[in-house]
Length: 124
Image (cartoon, rainbow, N blue to C red; front, top):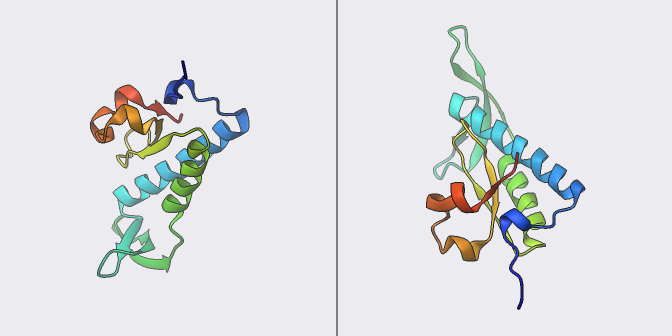
């Protein structure tokens, strides 16, 4: 009988897991900056991320430079690592918790946003 790789039994190497953790931290910081207003999206389809800085009143209204979308870069890198084992990644954008999870898409049955806390492995 063939065994199925689940998120909880994935044979990630130590280096791969450390990389996933680093990517998760990048994603989490990005989500936190978006939530607080330090990163805002511009354009008619919100395609350009821009850094904003605090004004004299403590709000992010000072327009800064256009920045590289590190969130999508990190997610793509995480997908490549997980994909080596037939797994997928789930991005939870709420910065109050873990931002990156690894899971088996067959276990999710298209409902990962409802099931991630029980079937996915948090990258922490």
